[in-house]
Image (tube, rainbow, N blue to C red; front, top):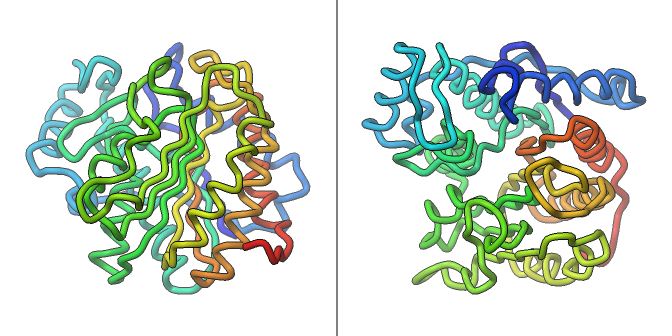
Amino acid sequence: MYIYAGEALARYGFGEGHPLGPDRFYSFWNAFQASDLVMRTSIKEPVQGQTVDALLFHTAAYVQRVEELSALGKGMLDADTPVIPGIFHIALTVVGTVLDAVDQIMHGHTEQAFVPIAGLHHASRSKSAGFCVFNDCGIAIEALRQRYAIRRILYIDIDAHHANGVFYAFEEDPELLFIDTHEDGRYLYPGTGSASETGAGAARGTKLNIPLPPGATDALFFSNWSRITDFMDRQKPEFIILQCGADCLADDPITHLHLSSQVHLETAKMVSRYAKKHCQGRVLALGGGGYNKINIASAWINIIRGFLEDQPDDSL
């Protein structure tokens, strides 16, 4: 399993004091280095992305706007996403690293890869949103299709926030299979992802949104397990992307779910088993959100542990 780590990734954020700052990466990295998992993984350096990579998903006008504001070094991309000097190239590092992980998996160098600072799932094709400058999830989907002719992709998201940037970009796409557990949009940004949103047109029924009420615990999460696995068993994906945000855990400062990192461990095990059965083991895991430093470390380490320790299971 490849783990991507380095200062260039840590730089994605909006300064000290902002919920999304550089300390998020090091909370994970320091705990990971002290764990028993280091010797069982391969560490890879971040990779600088290029403008052409962002254009796989985003409009040219939007990418140009980010570049221009980045050069100014001030302003706001949207109500929640401030501009910092160099944000264009910093955000492209996330993109380039995610695309390198895609390349490594598709070339057979590894079955699984984890990029901790990634999973920026709120940005739309033409706008930033919710601390997300470039939507590396959407870019990875488009790269798989345009560069590798991979059509059927399963996107799974357990971040507390609904992956609106991914969902609406592919709402009418029947080959983008989508599962998202998140805090009910009536109580949390971005306010989307109701259970009735199952895809549109020919894609109706290819999307599964599972909103959870504030205070939801592991018991409630796992009560939906059969719905998730039943949905997955009806699909035949060629590649899986797992966005594994840590902000669904108890005591996150900006969300209200009360899950534990056991959710991350069991999800990783289940996804890994499924991937080995259906798509040659190919899984790209993206860190996503999380603003409690202890939670970030425990959730992401459990993602890695789950991939490494999964056991065969005849239920999938």
